[in-house]
Length: 178
Image 1 (cartoon, rainbow, N blue to C red):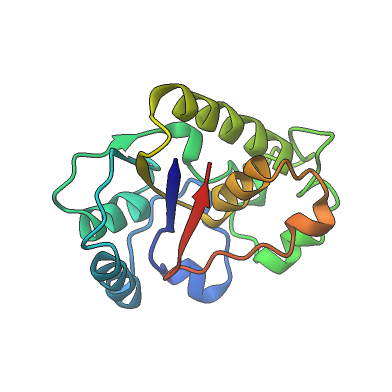
Image 2 (cartoon, helix red, strand yellow):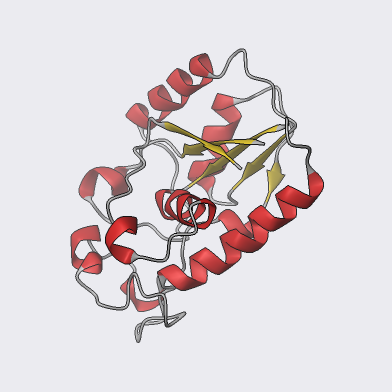
């Protein structure tokens, strides 16, 4: 099956380099334009289903990208819980040794580690594999963290050196054969 993974459009926190986590934040003007561009790129693509993170920015993106589809909200593709790390800049979080841990599920500040995201995304993808046919196309509107987890699960990657090089921009569609 093909997974089309769209990262939500840009938010003001993205511009400032602040990690939003589960904070409900809508798209900024540029984010709306990004979603409109993705809408045009996917205009002729037919999806068996559309899955969306429950955050406001992901839902708003989905409403612009595929307004004709009813979408399924799934908590397993929401952004990571930040615990006491809310409001931090992304570069500061990448310096936290547990941020990308594959051994621990939480940092000492209560934030989800990469392992926690990897496990919930693996469960989500295993369910998709059971539910859909090989030639189905699924749209997933989510976050950079979840996109990175999807890439890692599909590629069976637990090597953080490979994982940290994966980037998913706000105006980009990643397509995975699964």
